[in-house]
Length: 414
Image 1 (tube, rainbow, N blue to C red):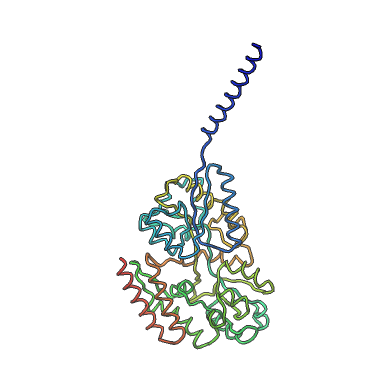
Image 2 (tube, rainbow, N blue to C red; image 1 turned 90 degrees about the horizontal axis):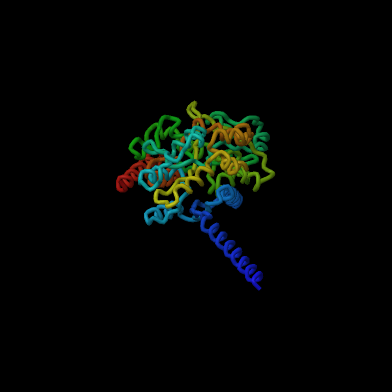
């Protein structure tokens, strides 16, 4: 009887020790930190890839969980409202166009103190990194980018007896005349938005905005570049807007062979390959204007909310997504270009027949950034320039009206 009691007591003690040990392990196990990441919606392929990259991050960082949220409509308005209400995500996308205003408002966390030598900041393309610097501090790390390049229909070129892409804008206009009305309805597809025209303004020494952030695109130098677009559309009648041919984008009017040439970004390559697989096309650097190379560059960064309660974890996410391994996973499929030079070299995009003109453009591209109040600048330009393009008013008058209205709005906001 005594032996049975002792056995029973031993069993009870063993169970108790096991329970206490397990409880202690549970107490000592670190709890996962959840951080929120917000961005706008991309293509289904892009969204799927980002989720895979985030899963890889979580696998390598078991104490951090990422809650990814897509803001489909009015992205910047939603972000600004949440920043004011202290309800913004820990990490979020920030377009270079919107960066100057947010960087000046003391709502973003400067990243300089987090960046170590191992992170290799010098590996980033300087033009892209500079778009997210303000008062000598870094507020964002660019996740990807695209410049613009000339896309041309090889079948249409061959039919017109053209063997090489144009290298100057005068040549482009000449080619456009030869291509119009043959295999394609028009030789060239034009996008009149400021985002696609700023480099033409700069080609003649003009400015989009001056050093004080005011609109300056009505100067004689700026008008020289813009006049090229108006003349080709109104005088030559060899270019078309997307609305002229019943399409929704420059990529679509090119894909549908409504135009033989168009200037687009890297995003057009997978779209054209998937949607128009029979289309034979090639790319080239944008023809020179006034003997100068020019293009635009568009980029987006990951930034950290200054009010984040999980800054260490937020930095781990940013540094992974913009680090060499994470960026290679993100840009390896080719729908986005890497902002790190080493990753671009490793992926071979500088030698890719379609992407090399886009990569080459980064050395001389104009960043898509127009001061702290981009809406006033962009909306007024776009509205008035289209009016001039359609012949409703002279170009000089249109641009002066746009410049005056933009600067009045800026003054009211300051």
